[in-house]
Image (tube, rainbow, N blue to C red; front, side, top):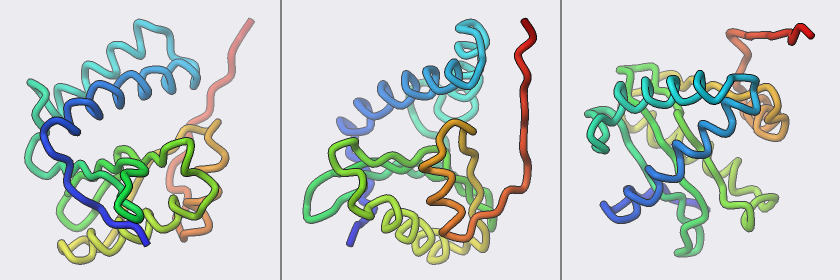
Length: 150
């Protein structure tokens, strides 16, 4: 069983540094140039946590299992339709069902806070995450495709 526990300021600072680096790398893996990835990251930071402080409606949690931090979740309250900006289970804890438990903990939190719908985006190359979301009842509502021309 996992619990979502709000990060303390020190945990948030470490996570905040790490999450944008990882997101930038994923953007480039998805085909953006370094410049495009940097611009995307800067825009997202300015819209969600300018000055390193999350704007109202953003919730950043540790994922805790058996009193151990095993990952992190970033949720955004968009009235009844919430958005998962980030969900990560630490590499050493993957394959144990914690991702599925985390998805269910997110659902419980969102319902308890008046949400009726949860959305997320996932990179096409992240097949493991896509399969998890599909088996948890998420449906594709939008699909972006790219072709590299050589």
